[in-house]
Length: 492
Image 1: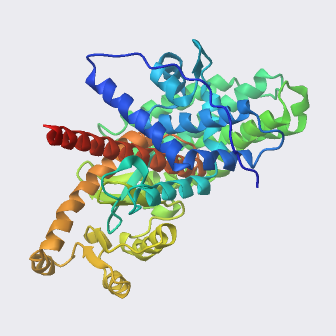
Image 2: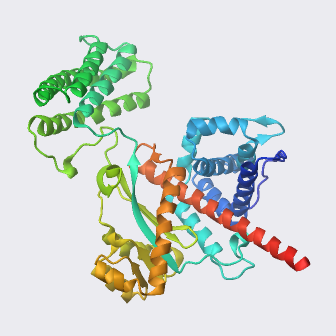
Image 3: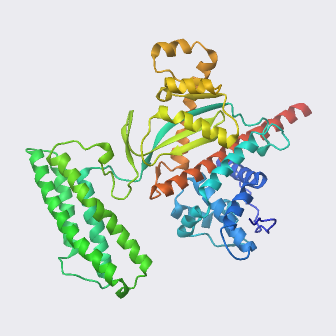
């Protein structure tokens, strides 16, 4: 395995002196501290090595600096909450962003495009990123102040952990059954327009006719919710929409075969052709099931099991998650499990693809992961009542871990709240809700726009890394300010 022993970092211009903007100066301080954390922890070098070892050819300063720029760009994207396009624009005009990502030299700047930024995310292995997160935590929790990361006054406490679950919403519209059929018509007809534009044609009506017809039926379906005979009108409109979809499906299958057979007659490469074929196949395969689902629910008036529902033609790995909360009775996406320690550092996380497991079934697996990654069991495990069960209580007792799970039985809860430690743990657990809110709304950008579960999972790990660096930087700055105040008091 090759290692990067030394390399020449690109020169960085000094940041301009800015007065009067406290928020900006605080942001500069945090980014400078994160820059220091990345360098001192060795995480940056480790991740650079992980990418270098997957590449062939000589290791040049230019290659290393580009990987370094890629790493810092993705971290900064998660910190700022910007998407690829917005970040590319901001990188072009922000001296701070250029400084952090080693982008500008001697007045010249060539910011990465949105496409390059998207590729940077996949340069780094997900396991390597997870190991880097745990390495940061272990260094910050070191008892020896001389080797402790971040110049913290006290080592990071790993004794108490606080766990909770939430829903990461999918980037889909509300999954109305008949809307899926409208989506299918639009996707297939737009694909056919692309194919016809490259010179491959088969006898059929103008594709725009089908798009206009789908829009009119969508308007009619929306309008049929009100007025006399609403239910009968909805059924009539759905039957017309089903007929349209079957007609569209027939033409789509014909054009799909035509493109697969005669793609060399177009200007596309085979790879570009495969992309169009993949898009069409995705809808063609699901359309019969989507038609059946709409028929069962609207015409038949019968329920469809959540496990059999198609929520989106474009995101298969999303689920119906019953939240039972005000304004969010039901959400659509993936279940996210997060565990934090007392200072807000995320210790463990899991995004579920195939299923929506119960909260109580996550405890043992999470505690064992924490033990494997951090080398020790926590001293206490604190959650809401959704995690509580006799099996989990027995497991925690066997491992010598304090049971801080909120009791389901009100009488038992009232009795346990007499214990000062338990009462304090439950009070602190409320902050975990706020932590998840910050993590979702800022670092995950409220709705994860990445397509496909694999890409959402990768974005989650990047978000955890950026979040933990941000928390450590804030803690380090607060401890430094406290030391300076103590020194001033001592000098006075």
